[in-house]
Image (cartoon, rainbow, N blue to C red):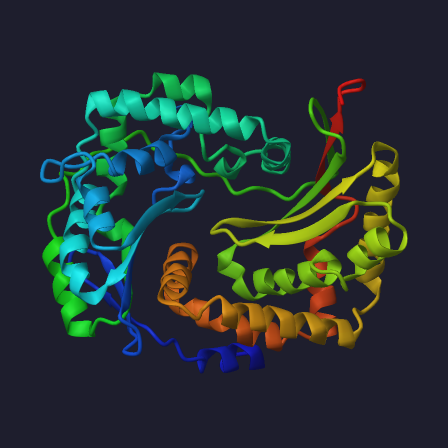
Length: 428
C-alpha cells in the first residue's frame, strides 16, 4: 500500500452513515450549536438514467415531484415550507437528482413527512404534466438563447461521443413533447426506490430522533416498475483534435472552449489532482494563463479552467472569451503551455499557492448544514460519502512530479475537443 493510501485511510469522516434493510442510505451529522436542520435527499436518477428516447425525463420529473401525491395536494408542500419559514428546492444533473429543505428542528417533523410523500408517491397527474411541460419548454428556450449554454452543450457533444454525458440535462424539445405521464410514472417507480436513495440530515437534531423520523417516512415506496434499459458505454479517450465551429447571433466576443476526458470518481486521487492543475493553469488572477493571456498580452477578455467531477468520466475544460482574430493564437498558446508541462515541473511555489486556495475553499464550503449535506450527498452518489473528507488531504499531498505524471496522462495537446463560437458577421 502506498504512503498516500495509508494516510488517507486515517482521515476522519465526521458524519455517521447507516443503511436500512430496504437499501436506503442515511447520513446524519448532529451540529448542536445550530437550530437549523437540512434534509437533502439524493437519488441516482439523473440524466444518465434516461433511455435515449426519454431525454429530459429526469429534469421534468424534478418539476413534477412538487405537484403533489395522493396525500399532498398541489401547492400544499410549498405552502407548508413558506408558513414554517423554511426553504425548499431541487436540482438535476447527469448523475443525480436531489431535493432539499432547510428548516428548524421542531419544524422538520412537519416538513420531512410531506417531502418524503411527494418523493416516494408522486401522482404525476395528466393536467399538471401538460401545464408543467410548458414551464420546462420555456426553460429550454431560455437556455438556448444563452450562447454560453449553447457552447458548453456543443462542447459536451463534441467530447463525449458515446456516453449519455453528451446529452442536455434539460432534454430535447421534440422528444419532450412526446413524453407521457405514464412514461414518467414508469421512470419514477423504477428509479425512486430505496437502494437508489440517500437521505442526508445535518444540523440541530440528534441522531436517534433523525433516524426515527426517516425510518417512519421512508419505508412505503411506490410499487416498482421497469422502464426501458439504458446502455452506458465507457467513453474512449480522444485520438485526435475534434474541431467544431458554431456561428451565433447576438454575441460580440468569440468563445474558445477546449475539453479533455479525465478519470471519474473511481480514480478520486487523480481527479482531485486535476482540480489542482486546473487552478494552477487558469483558475485565478495569478494563475499562468490568466496572467499571460489576459493581464500581460491582453489576448482574452477572460479565461477559466475547470474540472467537473463526475461518476464515470470527469470533464477538464478551458473557456476563453476573446476577439475572433485571436482564436488561433490563443489555442496554440494553450497547447504550447500544456506541452511544456508534460516535460517541466510546475514550480513548487505555484503548487503551494493553489493548495492553500483549494483547501481554504473546501473549508469555506463546508461550514453550514446545507453545504455539508450537499457535499455528503454528492459524494455518496459518485463515490462514497466518506470520500468527501479526503479532498484536503489529497490536495496537500500532491507533489510536482506526481502532477506532471497526471497531466501528461490526461491532458494531451494533440488529443482534445475544441468548440469555437463566432458572431455572425454583420449582426452586432
